[in-house]
Amino acid sequence: MPSGWVLPRLSKVLGLEGDKKSIIKFEFNPKDGIDNPALSLTEDTDGKGVGEPRFYLLSKGSAETFGFCLHEELGCQGHVIRQVELGGLAQRRGLQDGDRLLQVNGHFVDHMDHRRVVQKIKASGNQVLLAVLDSNSYEAAKALGRDLSQMLPADIRPRLCHITRDKSGFGFSVSGPEGIKGTFQLSVRQDGPAEKAGVPPGSWLLEVNGASVRSYSHAQLARKLKQSGSKVTLLVASSAVEEFYRLRGLRITAALADTSWLPFKVRELHMVKGPAGYGFLLKEDDCSSGATGQFLWDVDAGLPAEQAGMKEGDRLLAVNGESIEGLDHQQTVLRIRAHDDQVTLLVIDPAGDEFYQSIGLSPLLFFEDSDPPSGSCTPSLPSPSGSPGLCHIEVGPKGPGSWLVAASSSIGFTQSPCQEEQRRLHQAF
Image 1 (cartoon, rainbow, N blue to C red):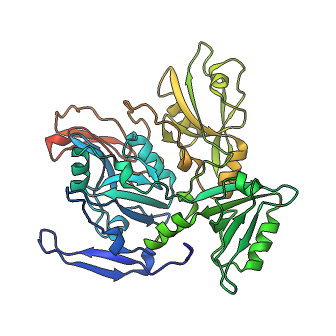
Image 2 (image 1 turned 135 degrees about the vertical axis):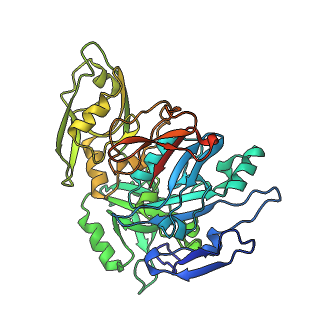
Image 3 (image 1 turned 90 degrees about the horizontal axis):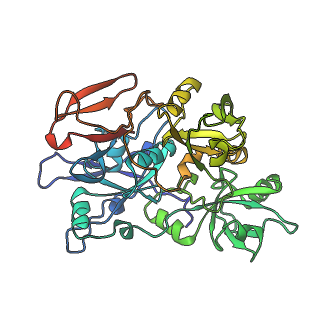
């Protein structure tokens, strides 16, 4: 069965806290979408106290939050799920306080810098797939020296493939059961455009140019492909990937995709300021989507910007590992100037920018380059989303029981409930 076929979701409601025989009750909530709690609540062990990872697909409205905070705490390994909002989306799905985050949209993140993990969740937009391990299992696995990445499926991501037709076409054909909409399997011609673009033979077709094919008839799909002209973007899933999501009642979307086959890449530019500066102009302008963006122009020959690989017309996505989405021009300038002598920018060229805007996804979601160096990052500006900001904390003037909290318009001190959390990185979602 293709991943477009879904079963009703069952939401988990736990009994009273502290009851050794906590009652687990399942209720249907159509607003929540779909899930299979019998699978997501798996607690099988290998005899050494290590349970299995759990997978949750969180889908929220644009005005909602996911309902949890992600912490990095002293004396506590991993990226820790905290402050799970009572009745919020995360709790309804089954996330629990103390869970350790292992994957974001199929990317293993346990080894990543905290800021990079926060960026991946933010870039995911209104939907994110998380893989977590309960606190006791995580600590037991670490004590046993287990490779946590080996506890997860090797490849659970669908593929985004951008195909340019040749004289004989796109290089694939479509088949499906007669009279049933939305069920299409692909046969791929050897050495044809589709195979070269990364389409696996026998894969299921899920989207064409950002539009789901769940409701398409065979004739409608044929028209859609014909209207694509010389290029088409497909979201496809191998049979193994399709089965993984189907068995868990999870719907596959482009935000979960492996984009390594795409020709459009986010580039990381690290620059050290020279005597004449970095050698580029930052200009605010309209994006093709109608939103406002920050663009890089007037790249001076021989200066650090050109040497780092900056191109005329690149759009700026992030500064020093932090997305600039929602920031105006002056705020972006201040971010670039935050460190006097060097800066790291994430950028994308015009063709890549147009592609990602056409499918409605942030290019930052798919940035998989090497992790940025960790270090102090004291926030001087509010977070673009207005949620608590991310910062590297040193012991504050109130002594060893305090930490900084970067709010939407101010930075203040809050007393820590325990001395083990003297310094803490945290980000609300």
